[in-house]
Length: 347
Image (cartoon, rainbow, N blue to C red; front, side):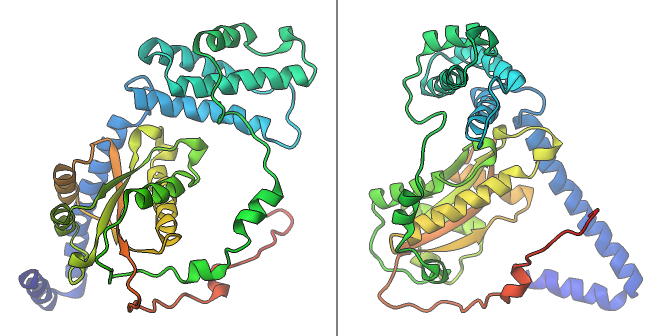
């Protein structure tokens, strides 16, 4: 690395500034083309951009997006009876494909429950059966699959429930979350990992496509092997008692407009996992994954990360010491972050 830096400095001294910029543009541009090409090939291969029927995961993602549009419709302040002719038809068609290929599993039961609630909603709203879109097909599917799944469709929530759960949570909970690089030696319990994973599972995901994954390592040798590839934990790697590789499945998305969505969903998922750790007094350090295609492949081989999952970041964690030192990491002024705006006429 030092030799490369020295060579770069020497070239900068020898070449005129315009020539150096041109050379650097060619080198950096070439690397960008290779990296974008790597991302493009993987997205085109694994996403549902060409077909949602290439795998169970692809079909589940497409079905989830479609049935969630029905859930959303029923959760509106004043949903229109009979809404959703096209999405309901899509759900019926895709669910038939899914059951034919993979059988009547729990996921199929979730979709059937949403369809059954859609029928109940329309009947309660006063529609005759003849006016309910795709009723015959829905009835056949619900009869075949069943609709006993309780956590699908819509549910009532009270403000009192939310306020009761959050009444003891103040800004201090967030301001005391620091990047920690000094940890206690105590091991992390399985129940603590499950708590944090449950918190991560509650993160928002586009159209409810919950395909974030946590590949967690607690063996010291495994942690060292993964961190050596990541390369950003020198000086404190031996402190880390647990390590999560956070990923999102590319099969969850399709078309050019969703090409970056894995990193949006994955970032929200990772932050919720970090807060799930923090809520238990477990410190964490976020480790970035801005790497070349070659390093990405090294990590996949070493950590067993499937090719259809995008690596978002790594999170190292451990129990807090009674006292420890952290970087202050001053926050930018609030007026640079918060801008309450009003759009003028014609904007």
